[in-house]
Length: 229
Image (cartoon, rainbow, N blue to C red):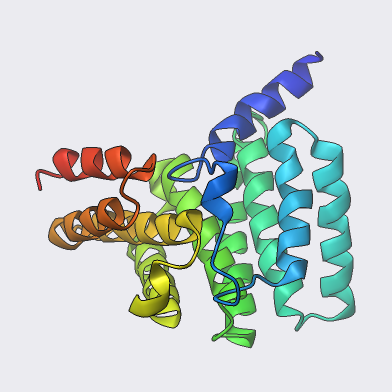
């Protein structure tokens, strides 16, 4: 493997594990009719996240497709939210390039600005604001601490709370283990970042209870212990 490819994989491998729990196939099953993701979002998730398998060419091709969509229609919220995610991925690659490392904070700032534009266009579309949440969660978890601030964690918290309210308590147990697990884990992450340990502990306990008997349970309980709950 060429040195550049090795460096790329080194940069992106941590991002590939950015989810609280990597989903088993059965973790992605929801009860019929409860919630269906936008096929466009699903399509570009597959294309963009191919980069985590080391296929930068596939990601780059998809990123250029998204750039073209935004160029054609700057108010295409679905394309904008993926543009923002892609800008974050490019920032991750730049972390390992000495000549580009200093650009990372600005690249992440641009990513967040793009994500905010997308959500402003479709504020009530869970496909859009939860893709912003996913991207913010990765920034908080995988980039140096100087790239996070109170606004990031506040936005992450609000996006997750909005999604949980959208799903509602009656439907929460019916959506996929992965969907409810990641939403609650990201919410707890936001509370932790905001210094609200009590709410973080409460959320991790709820996560452990809702996903009892899955890989989420021990990991959530470990977080509770870590936070002194």
